[in-house]
Every structure is written in structure tokens, then in C-alpha cells.
Amino acid sequence: MLSNTCKYAIRALIYIAVHAREGEKIGIKKIAEDLEIPMPFLGKILQQLARNKILSSTKGPHGGFGIGKDPSKISLYEVVKVIDSADAFDLCVIGLKNCNEQQTHCSLHEAYAPVREATRQIFRNTTIADLAEGIREGRRSIII
Image (cartoon, rainbow, N blue to C red):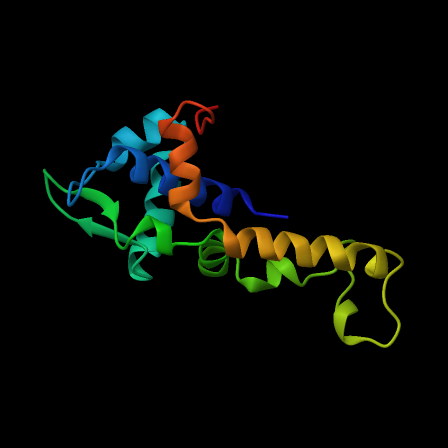
């Protein structure tokens, strides 16, 4: 359902929320190494998040990335919208064009509709802060 780009974005946001203190920035090299994400690819992702005010960034030798707003106000749905677009929750599960707009739907449409809506609600109601808390408590991981 989610692109690798979106998965990397979510992992990086959680990492920054866990490791950056108030106003502190973390260098892209450190994030990329710890999360085992290619640095050039991660850089593009983090810049996109910064352009959308989810992250803050500072250039230069002491630069890096920090959380741009309260992690409890950053839902997974918002991240998906920025990286993959909200279409990720509306596209046909088997790839038919306009499945949701047609009078006749794909074979899985009716069965998958409740799953799609439940997934959308999970992403709307889960924040980066929620996920970061599990990391801090040692109950969850973002490292491969």
C-alpha cells in the first residue's frame, strides 16, 4: 500500500522525534546510517517533508533536520498525503483505473472497502508521537 519512499519518510520522522531534543537538528548522514537508507534518496524525502513544514532543516556544517511541529500533531495520514498523496487510500486494490468512480467495481471492491476505511482511520488517528513513544519504551523498533 505504501511506497518505499513513504515508509522511509515515516521511519525517519520517528527517528528524528526520538533522537532530536527541542530545537536540536540531526545530520542526514547519521539518520541514513542508522536507518540504513541511501543518503541521496533520504535527502530528497527529508527536503519534501521540510517544504511541507513537517520537518525543519538547517544547512551548513552544524545543520540537519528537526521536527517542524509537535509530533503529536503529525498523523501518519498527513505524511502519506505529502509523500504518496491521499490516493494511496483510494486506489483500486488490484489496480483498475477509476474503480471507485464506476458503477461496476472490481471483484474485491466490496470486500476491501471496510479494510480501506479502517486503514484510513488508523493512519488518521496514529501520530509520530505515538510511534516514537513505543521506540523510547523499547517496545518497538525502526531499525532493520
